Length: 183
Image (cartoon, rainbow, N blue to C red; front, top):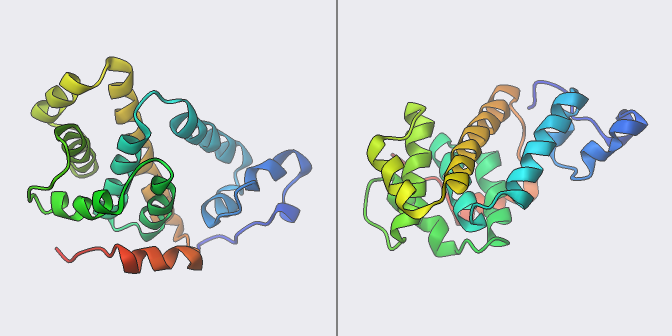
C-alpha cells in the first residue's frame, strides 16, 4: 500500500488537473508535489516524444532497469508502452537472457544498450568498453540521451519503491506473461 494517498483530479487545484491526464498511480501520488510532478512530466515528455534516440532502444533500456530492479510497476507499464515502439515479445524475453549474461539473438547495439542500463543501475556508471561500443553506433546527442534516460528511470524506480506505489491490476497480467526469473 502506498505511503501517501492517491489523489484524484477532484483533489487538485484547477491549474494542476492536467497532471492526471494519465490516471496512473505514479502520477496520482506524485501530484502531492505539483511542481515536482510538472518537472517529471516535462522530462518524461522529452524522453518519449522529442529525444532522437531510437524509441525501441529507449524502451529496451527502461525495461532492463525495471527487470533488474524487480520494479513490477516500471517493468509492466513499460512492457505495455514498449509494444507501441517496436519492442517485440522476443525482445522482452531476451532481457532475461542478457541479464543472466547469456548470448541472445539481439543485435550488438541493443546488447550494448542493455549492458549500459545494467552497469549504470548496478555500478552507477557504464564501463569504458560499453561506452566505447555505444559511441561506435550512436551520435553524441543520442548517446547523451541514452545516459539521461537510464539515469532518469533509475530515479523513477527508486521513487516507486520508496513511496510503495501499487501497480494497477490491469498491468499484473503482463508479469505473468513476462515474469522475473529467479537469480
